[in-house]
Length: 287
Image: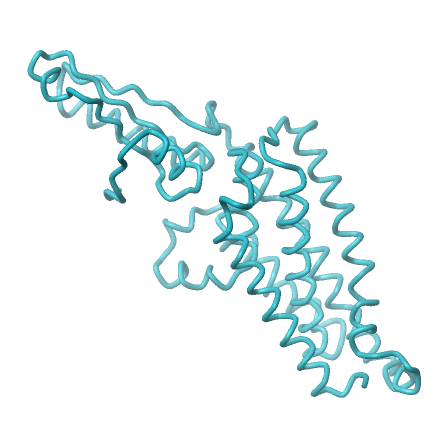
């Protein structure tokens, strides 16, 4: 662990913990030097419990330091957002990203490739259908299906797994909709490049589901990954949605406080939309 920053007050410290800027904060009260001289000083350790394993590791290190220092030192540890340090509270919000990645990318990757295999695009060129209307018609059913899955997954998380939804349901829906559009555009682009359903499904699985499972922070903490993989995770949309989902579910944060993470997803959405339209124009799918 390394010293990330210093805080001027409790509010600034709590906001940094809420945004995930630090994993833990050490509170040294006013008059600590005098109390230390009188052998009655106390310090407080505040830990972000969203990642239960990291929180447990920080607390274990703190206890080890107490033992090494000797008697007379007292550390009061408090875990925020996941007081019982249960792994399911951190895992279940991330599962929503996996479900939406499968629905959004894998299913969408088969649609255009199927039309190309059957030769239907040749017939569609004789109709007044535009390229944007064609893509919208292919993506809209899966967008609706993805939002239904979001509702089912959220209901299961809250009522079946007892995961608290401390944030706004509207913020969760907005973040999920943007993420769903991103992975759907990924699937559509893969479908155009692959040209057949078998290859499209395999590429979609490798490019979307596996990164969402391994490189999003869902299972493994990004900070513990090799530096090269940490840079690669910036190109994984699920990284941002997992962070948003955990922050909304467990921390109760709004999108206004998560504008940096949400902005990254919006930028990805705009880039993928432009690339997908450009690729469809180059392939001559429709006018």
